[in-house]
Each structure stands twice: as structure tokens, then as C-alpha cells.
Image 1 (tube, rainbow, N blue to C red):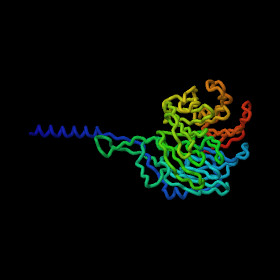
Image 2 (image 1 turned 180 degrees about the horizontal axis):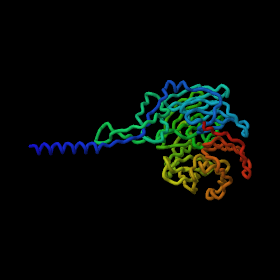
Image 3 (image 1 turned 30 degrees about the vertical axis):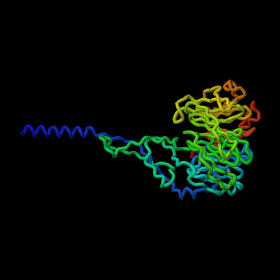
Image 4 (image 1 turned 60 degrees about the horizontal axis):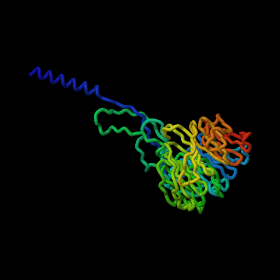
Length: 423
């Protein structure tokens, strides 16, 4: 009996030590959302004095003014009557702003889930005149590492995160342990740009990374999967018209010749704008998964594909697509790039923002030999997007706004530079 008791005690001790040694802990980073209430969001619009540009995003040009997005914070207003001496006039505070487009003297801008209509008829007295609430999908900001804590949309919009470390016992089958998969920020973000280059009385010009554009009496805005239409025949009072499903992960807009070219990570979609109130699908060109703005001139569409990170696994490149038969787009040629973003085309001159590799300018009259016809290469610019304006080229990059006189392609001259400030 005594031997049995000793044996039982030994087994209990072994089990206890085994239990302790099997204890498993995991430490991970938790991103807890911080919120701006809907009430504060909808009372946050303000016109302020000029501020330093710190994180430039999209930009837009109209009537000698440049509007530069400060990512998710608002819009810098720049007087560009003299491109050699641009002057930052003011800052429009718009939390959550990424995109913009203009019709007449009304500027349309997103503010997280809302659409703002802003009167810019008097640059000294810019004011909000209309707000359409809850018209865009709920989005969240980027986060770098770790997992995302629960989101409570009832508390407001997410403006950032409180980052903490958390350690949990993950041994056993405890229901309390739940390892969240990381939510890729691009799944939610509407990161893109502005209205594209379009000849349309009363509108301006924006970059190729377009998610907003005005065509006729309609403002088009894309989210990750749909084309949203707003009737702006009464420019001061947009009316939401309809949502047209397109495809998952659509990214950019470019209207051209009564057509709308939509760039997606899976390819390029073409819609007819013969009836601007009801865009109709024409065709699709598929390519490998990648981030891809598109611009069009004549019979050719030019697409930059950026691989790596969240964009795709392919090598970065420029594609030239034959759209002479618009129902059947056909790939003509592919050119390697480093990390291309926006691009522009004007009179067969192609401008490509190749990220850290700089701004590249080509003659594009021969689609099969673009790489052999490099006009200029500005390696010192971390270029993001361009707007060609006939003789003046606007370039937005990580380090600021550049302007070039390209009236003589043999002698392109830098006109000015507005820098980004780190502090």
C-alpha cells in the first residue's frame, strides 16, 4: 500500500512538472484603433493659413492653381500663376482626405466616408457648402506590424492606432486565445488619386492615379470594387446616383474620348461614356496582378505595373496596349521599370514616374521602341505622379512638387521646386 502511494505521488509530480514545461506564451503587437467621432468629423472643415507640405499625395490643377493633398489631412492651395515662383496660399483642413476633382468653382473631396463640396470661387474665403454622408466605404489607415484589434464603427472613423505588446498563454485549446490575421491596409484604403486629364469645360486636370473624375454632369468615384456616380448638374449640391459593380481591387480612372478606362490589379476595364449617367462595359484587358494606373492617347493605352509588396509578384514594367479595336485590347510591348507609379502622355511624349529611379521622359511615337527613345531622365526625384500641361510639366514626388518647362524637348528646364518638410 505504501509502495502504491509513493508511485501515485511520483506520477502527480511528473505530471505537474510536465504541465509547467508545456506552458507556451506568445508576445505580439496589437494595434488598437483610435477614433474621430462622426460629430467631430462633420464639424472639422477649416480654412487655415499656409502650412508646410509634409506628406504629399494627389494633386490637381485648375485655373493657375495647384491643389496638393496632404495625405488624410487636407489640401494645400498653391497659386501657380507664375510656375517659376509658386506660392502656397492656404491649407484646407479635411480629415481623411485623399482624393479630389473640380467642376467650375466647386471642389469635391472625400473625408473618410463623406463627400464634401467646397466653394473655391473666392480663394480667400474657401468654404464647405455641402456634405454627403456615408457615401464611401468605411476605411482604416495603414499599420506596419502585428494584429488589428476589434473595430467599432459606431465610435466613429479610425484615425490611427495605439500600439501595445501583449503576451498570452497559447498552450492547450483555450477558446480565449484568438490570433487575428493581419488586415492588409490596402484591402480597405482608397489610396489613389485624382481626376485624369480630360478636355471638359469647367474641370481641371489631375494625375493618372485617379479615383475621382468629373465628366459632363457626373462625378465618378471608385472604391475597391465599384464605380460610384454623383449627379453634379447642380454643382453645389451633388446627388448620389448609382453604384456600378466593376471588379475587385480597382484603383484608377482615366476618361478619354467618351470612354472611361479603369485600372485594376487584375487588368484594365473600358466603359462607354456616351451616356454619362449610365456607363456601359465595353471590354477588359487582363494582366498579372499588380498596381496599375493607365493613360490613353490615340490608339494606345499605357499602363505601369508595379510588383512587390501588396501590389503583386511580377516584375515592374510599362505595358503598351493597342486599343484601335476597343472591344479587343491587345498587348503590343512590355518594358522593364524599377517601381513605376503615375504616368502621363501628351502629343506622343510619355512621362513615367519610376519611383526612386526618378522621372523618365520618352518619345512614344514608336510603341515598339520606347526604351530606345529616352529624352530625359531625372534620377534625383522620387517621382509619384505627373500632370502635363502643354508646356509645363507638374511632378509630385515624395520630396515635393517640381515644375519643368518642356516646350523644347531638347532643352527641358526646371522652373521651380516646392519642398517637403520633415518636421
